[in-house]
Image (cartoon, rainbow, N blue to C red; front, side, top):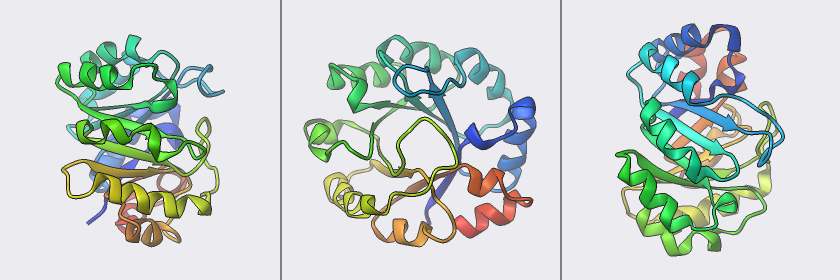
Length: 211
């Protein structure tokens, strides 16, 4: 069964702790935390202090997605704040292999993300070292965007690249009950859903539909 990682980017930021408790009770598998710095992407969201404050609201894995410039400077602070998985963007990394090692040194699982316009060739040489490959199906920076259909063949190729390893294939961007089966059929293990969950009046029903 595909894992569902609701993105708190679409949650009510005035009551994040309550929102996390709600999606935990509703059947979420992971909590996806989008970290944006206003440089690598145009939006600004949360830092390690917020992640540390939220850690006490759930025991679910914290899936921290660093959409930031110079990610190496933030890996240790987010690990110390309670991250379980830390994903960096290949496009933001001058030394991707080193960053993966840095994440593993903290005890966290290491993920690498690719923007829609970035080729899989960027991560071919580190595919055997990662625990998660994240394919973005929107251009990162904002929630509520529409799924880019032309990314479906890329998801399938990513599945082939990950192969039979233990690494997760995660897809993030515009995931809804209407397209999740298509994404799953291409090989996704984990789907990130923001507005599809937090925009629903019934979080449990929304997560159940996605699963």
